Length: 228
Image (cartoon, rainbow, N blue to C red):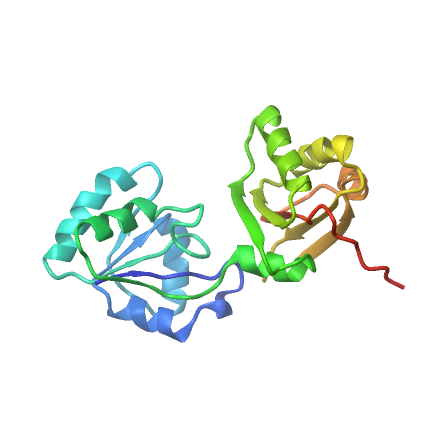
């Protein structure tokens, strides 16, 4: 059996009891970055062999893991934060498990995507998740325009080093577009910055963005609440 186990996106207390029990019982834990995951495992008294499984070695490691599973091993897959395979390693391994008829289960748990969606105050009945925004400005601009004209909330991951550029691109074409910059979710300095793309561009021009960011774009017909 292989277990895909979500880990906290910031606050360690968000890990589930089932996740802890699973990680204590398996024979091997694969981690996106063992240096990042070891402190989390040690914090919960979990002492199991670990193996690095990341974007650069996943294709090479998958056959080895499949052979271990066929031999009867129980393996857990975790990443640095959140759900494995969602903009993180794990997708190739999941496909290989299906192809080789390996039994697997996915545990529910922390998700930056859903946390940011609910916290943004934007419509939640339907949404689009686009992963990380493109690095190149041209491709990023096209994706932002599509999101600004969409009828559902759009969610992206963005680097704190590029968020100002992203807001500038969007503000140039859609200055009144309602957006939300969700920062450091579940951590001490968690914040939700809401407003038009122009307003948030002006804000972050004066206040440098820090930490992990989820960037949300409201639907084209969204009307912001009038706060007192």
